[in-house]
Length: 65
Image 1 (cartoon, rainbow, N blue to C red):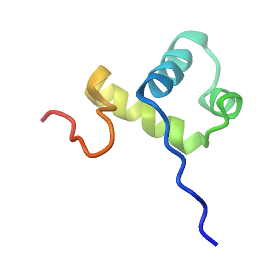
Image 2: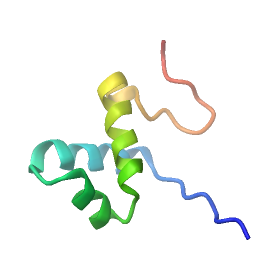
Image 3: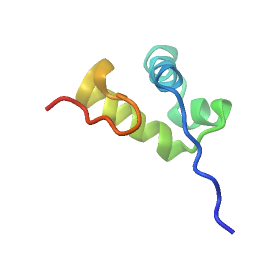
Image 4: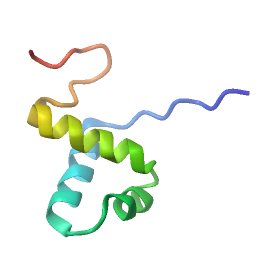
C-alpha cells in the first residue's frame, strides 16, 4: 500500500524557512513542530537559498533560470 504524497502550500514553505532563519531553533525542531520530515525542511531551505521567494512556484511550474 502506497503512502499518499503530502503537498504543502508556498506560504507554509516560506513560513517554515522564515521560522528557521529567525528563531534560532534547529531545523529538526521546526520540522517536528510543523509535522514535516527534517529532510523536507532542509530541502525547502536549500531551494529558498538558491531561488529566494521564487523557490516554490507551484505544481508544474519551473523556477526561473
